[in-house]
Image (cartoon, rainbow, N blue to C red; front, side, top):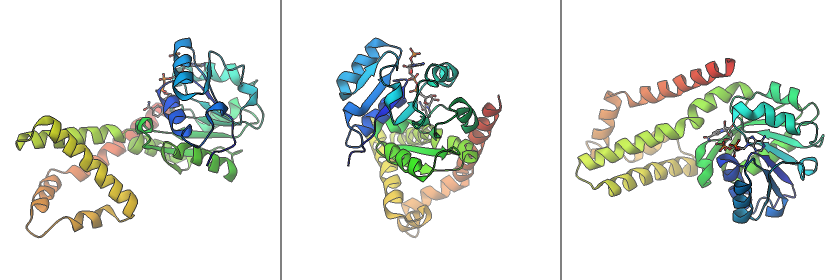
Length: 269
Ligand SMILES: NC(=O)c1ccc[n+]([C@@H]2O[C@H](COP(=O)([O-])OP(=O)(O)OC[C@H]3O[C@@H](n4cnc5c(N)ncnc54)[C@H](OP(=O)(O)O)[C@@H]3O)[C@@H](O)[C@H]2O)c1
């Protein structure tokens, strides 16, 4: 069902495109989507590919959108905010995906508007993103529902307290890299066991995808699902024993904690 919203983007990079690609498929009408990017060629490409409006500069739409995504790199966010803050409507919902930009700073920059901070991840680009969002003091349940529906067009979304954003960064933000490493290592194992590389990588990636889908769709605890495929004295328990002996579980816990701590440190700078 299409939402009757006009949605603008400041920045037409990879993450903005991923959200556009998701929401044009039935959530928001392409004619209600506006993107501003620095590069004319990029604007043309986005307009042609998705049937949306895209322009260098936001003046043509900034006072006229219900939702405005800030989708620029952190180092240029101040400049992008300064360009739009006095032109954006007082009721426009501001959604920032800028890493590290806090709700305090967003609320100080946009004095009247409701603001929401979002941490997406790169699988958003294939419609399987995991986004967490935290609402500012002026964003209520209606705004949260709008954010959730927009983000769900390109994956899944969950609301968290802003204090959880570093942990989100350490888990789902950095997590795709952990899983790429896991898939690569499983593929190496397959090659070591005699498989061709292409087949090994396909087997590894689809196995990770399928296992994740089972967790999400059955709602069963991962331990229960693991137990269901682990027969007494069988092959699976032989493999699991090695992973437990080598500390895979502890390594993954430590990886999430290390990335969370790093995010906290970077946030203080
Ligand atoms: N990629 C990820 O995995 C990921 C995950 C979570 C969060 N994020 C966050 O998402 C945000 C966007 O990331 P991205 O990878 O999509 O960045 P990106 O590909 O660099 O896209 C940003 C685009 O915005 C343009 N731009 C910069 N300032 C502008 C302005 N004032 N007005 C209009 N356009 C402007 C840039 O053009 P020029 O290059 O010509 O300046 C660029 O085309 C970042 O803050 C990042 O922290 C990314």
